[in-house]
Image (tube, rainbow, N blue to C red):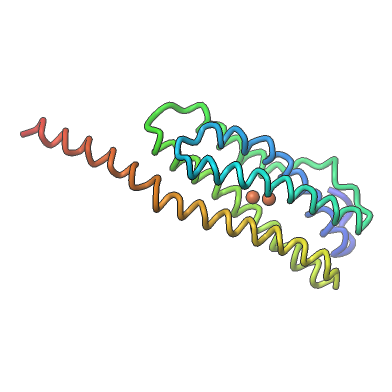
Amino acid sequence: MAEMESLMDLLEDELKDLYSAENQLTKALPRMAKKASSKMLKDAFTKHLKETEGHVKRLERIGKSLDIKLSGKVCQAMKGLIEEGKEILGEKGEPSILDAALIGAAQRVEHYEMAGYGVVRTIAEHLDLTEVAQLLQQTLDEEKATDQKLTQIAEEEVYGEAAGIGAEEDEEELEEEE
Ligand code: FE
Ligand code: FE
């Protein structure tokens, strides 16, 4: 970690962390889209990949305006979250259950990003870096929207099917018992 003498130092460090996180995500999201069975979920991952590429660009713009070099840090938390997500990629099973697991992994990622962007947005506001704060807020809004979309897909599509599978099996078991 760089020396922490001011809020600006902290902002710099937090931005580097997010830059690493976003870059890691651009590599993970295509794999998640490939693994998803639900068309809605696949499309959501693909759409968020495009947004994530935009998040990287936005951070680069901010880095330029603040004269900060963003590369060179590894976000260990995102690395861990992606590691967990990778376990699902190798898993076999009911497509809707795997989709539900992918949603769980993706929502953990979005919440991590939401926390990170909330922090840097607030620091930027506090430092009167109005334009920077606005750019960070835009990304934060997209992360929130993605999180909500994932909940919607879970409720409207994936869990219904997943519950159906479980129910059918339970019925079969009951019939066998009779
Ligand atoms: Fe992002
Ligand atoms: Fe995101």
